[in-house]
Image 1 (tube, helix red, strand yellow):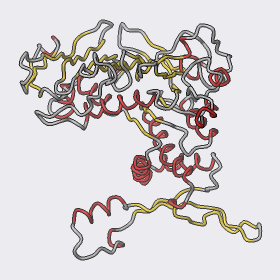
Image 2 (tube, one colour):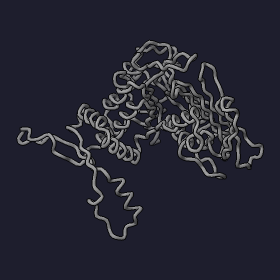
Image 3 (cartoon, helix red, strand yellow):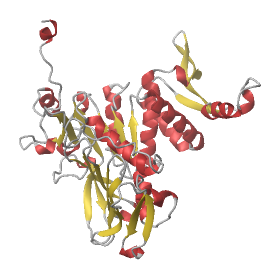
Image 4 (cartoon, one colour):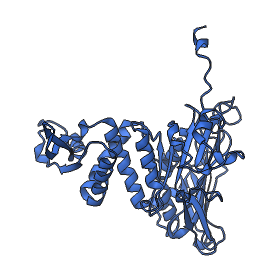
Length: 432
């Protein structure tokens, strides 16, 4: 489970900003808090299962999620080759003192066997400058590895040094690659590899990205073709949210059913077969003069509304996250969804009878109806706001001493008491 994420000098985040899912001492809305046990000697932590992030357009809220997305990909699947620039390097460019300085990223989380980890990664355009992984196996911090940087800035090789528990073994790593990546691909390590797996599996979804939703939809269809429980839960969700569907059917298409030109390249043929392996249809009620004739009148699912398709793709992925106890970030959760449906998806994570494995959902939104004092605690609500220099400030409702748990969050936010809203000038000034 994620505890804290800190980012500095990344896109609009000039100064260090820390986003936390550690719950404050308030006993309000205890269904939004779960107790995370820690390894021997460390006790336990109270963590939040959801967090919501508001801000004006271009205030930087999406940049926090982008940092998580890009850096976890850099650690996992998107390594540059030796001698190449680090593609995720994207510093704050509106200040002379920062535009060539390193990006700094820190994530604290609880992984397998209730062990707490802290991973730090600093990098500039060409080199990883600092990398360190610490864990707390028995109540005290211990170093799993650190990174030694060559004084020769042109050197392609850095040295990773494991902690004393691994006899301080040294490992070569390219200058522009994360040492942690090696423990997910080349070097198995009982503890460090678990940290790699945890970070690389963190998922960030941009709900505005139709290609991403299409990709998600294909993944969910395949999963449901193999998992009848997931299919059953999706059918229940679609019926529950009043989509008009009575259920969905998934059929695997035999490759012989496709007709291809004789000269089509095999690679393109295989790609088409992969992307169209399944056909999904929706069951609707059919009436004859108001008399129900059948409940399984079939319609190709692609003909359904954009909102229904979004519920399937995004809702299906969230159901998976809950089933597996995963961490998932969603940018602009409300896209194509009625506010009641957005609220329902969030509520899935806040119901301990449903979210039995303490999955966490962090999302951005502009939908103020979600800013409901009956659904969120103060420490779950975050805002971004840019200063006059274009730098993002990140803060939560917990930072306001005059805000109570029963304060009407939505009304105060719209009144500008928390910041994080557009500063719109008089409309008439556009025509003067």
